Image 1 (cartoon, rainbow, N blue to C red):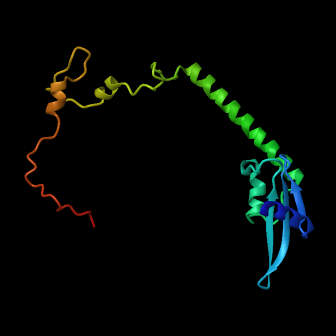
Image 2 (cartoon, helix red, strand yellow; image 1 turned 90 degrees about the vertical axis):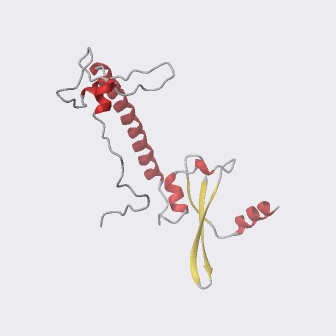
Image 3 (spheres, helix red, strand yellow; image 1 turned 135 degrees about the vertical axis):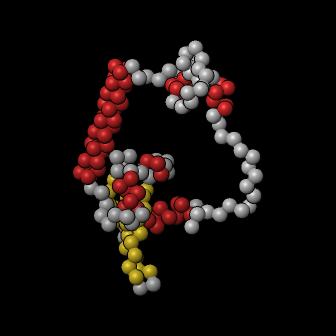
Length: 168
């Protein structure tokens, strides 16, 4: 009932139509004096269902007072054309990147579960330095025993819980 009363009262108020967007939503404002201060109220009347997601960003900014002037139809057309150019550029860049990756053969191996495989561990192990006495397996990689013997050892006799302080 209050919604109906609000619509009827709205027809008799001094509201001003500012613009209409692509979805057909209409935007209004009215200047009111509240406590001796002139304030501007802004609102939207939706076409059809009240769907806030149908409001373009520029109109949202105007409604929230982030813009002083409402967006013009010419501005909205320019912005829509720009957004379309950006979408096309993104699609073109994705296509070029896929072509470049397929030419270079750098497409990652994908296992049946759809997950990307991890790094090659053999190339990682080759980077681990081995001493001159280090034993190596058939492929020239250090053996598991050699890697274990090069790990740090100690008794931890100087460690005391709760005594660590950050450097000053």
